[in-house]
Amino acid sequence: MLDPVRDCREIVYLLTCYEFPWDIERALEFALFRTYAVPSISGLLDRTGEFTRRPRKRYDDTELILAEILENGFDTPRGQAALKRLNGMHGRFRIANGDFLYVLSTFVFEPPRWIDRFGWRPLTATERLGFFHYYRELGQRMQIRDIPATLEAFERYNQDYEARRFRYRDTNQRIGTITRDLLLGFYLPRFLLPLGRPFAHAVMDEPLLQAMGFKRPSNLLRRLVTGSLKLRARVQRWMPPRQRPHLLTRVKRPTYPEGYEIAELGTFDEKPSSSGAPV
Image (cartoon, rainbow, N blue to C red; front, side):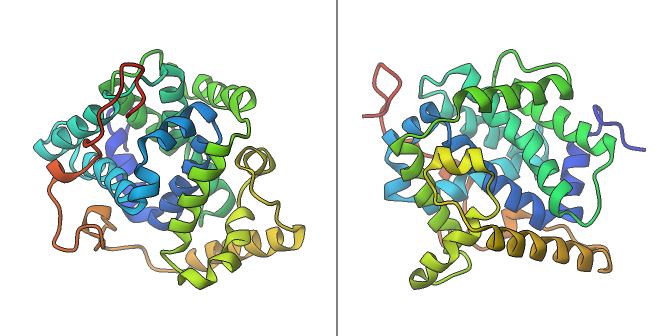
């Protein structure tokens, strides 16, 4: 039996690469919007200019860095190289520890919340703790301070932070709009994006929609989208177990058509000002 502390990476690896690869990837995509609903976070991202110049590269780099750590482990050469890139990027800016904590909490709680709604089976208590301990260790290796010691305390932090800090700002909407259209573009041609946007909004809760400045979808569309996702889960229960891992590091990406090196990942060309904002 796997231990949620000792085997936390293996637990998250199995869930992400075998049990719920599609669900966890979607959950973390929508988790991005929750971080953009915080003006201090969206404001910093807006000032970097990365989202307007090359949003796909920024998305791919973030996903690949985190996947390298998960798929290879914290203490392997590739895992250590990816963690060094992650810390190098974040270390260039003056980011509040509370914002770091909140972003970390979305990795702990958004995948289980998505799976509770749309997964083909519920997570076990051990799996939920595995998420917590894996990302707690990642946060410690990122030198994030004051990470709560228990799953329950971290969830209270997550909920209290959202209640206090979700507020509309133009930067929320600007960064969110670019990201939403990028994600929809994985499935739809550009001319169909306006039709796809309400479907993306239908998965978002009311506080998030308000903080992002996104139009509220109709109740009918909400029921259609959530019903379709729940139907997918029921069908998936009858599918045979996945035999090979779904590895994000192996996914073909237009950003890196010939493959990538870890040293290429991340955004390092802007120089931050003394205030922590890039110039």
